[in-house]
Length: 137
Image (cartoon, rainbow, N blue to C red; front, side, top):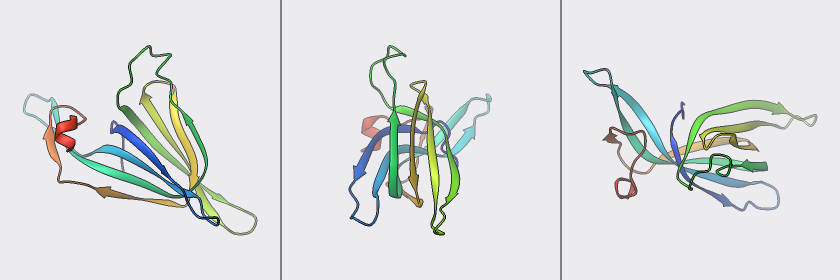
């Protein structure tokens, strides 16, 4: 899956039980399709979605609006990287890094065994790479 240029509106942390890490839920505008227009510009099919990571541990959040001297607004994902980790006891998981290109110098990293993505509504065609609050409902 490709999350490049997806707006990140919010994140939520849900507590896990004693044996498992919790969940991180990223509220994103998932770009389902880039549509090339006749004048070579683009429009986008966008669906508000929840990107849910399970069994999360080792969370590190670094979001820097201060160095950009900007007001708080939705972040923009550059890419999400994943690296497999196998422990001596045979347990395997993944190290994840959500690189954010707006604001610059920002990222979210954690360990998680996997993810699901839930689309909350049908895609809307937009000239921007994100939806307004009224379009997101």
